Image 1 (tube, rainbow, N blue to C red):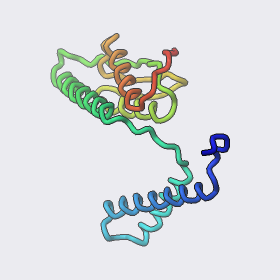
Image 2 (image 1 turned 135 degrees about the horizontal axis):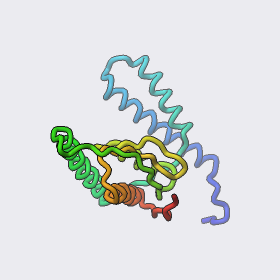
Image 3 (image 1 turned 135 degrees about the vertical axis):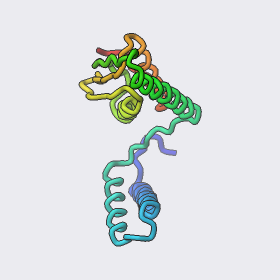
Image 4 (image 1 turned 180 degrees about the vertical axis):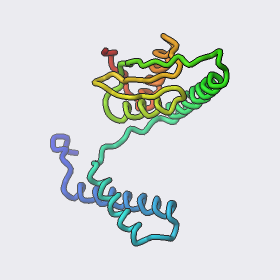
Length: 176
């Protein structure tokens, strides 16, 4: 085993690229077949070629694979908060004594740029009563239907911690 020269050989690069291409073609073909059945294969072949080429151009960065426990914890957190938020928003909509107290807040992120932030922003927007409207530097601009002071910051921080656990990454020190 040569530890000094860790550059892969041309042969290794060729086989890795071939294997990746075959997986992309198989996934694209399966996707087309699921969506279109046996219809439209001439167009499907073009779509398969385009999705395969796009997949190869994007690169071979490997996404981290979450542990099953982190994924279950994240799913439970998301389900619980979605259910609670949905009930709260619906209850406020039909009971005029509980008005909405909408607000805009800036929340400084501790997640690193890339996939963790993208997931955080998308999940935040899926949560009832919240909308991530912008990301400026390391601060998310969030619209809330019902702002509850410190509780909001705790909930945003909890979501951030669950995303960090899902990606097995430490959170950065808060900047803001």
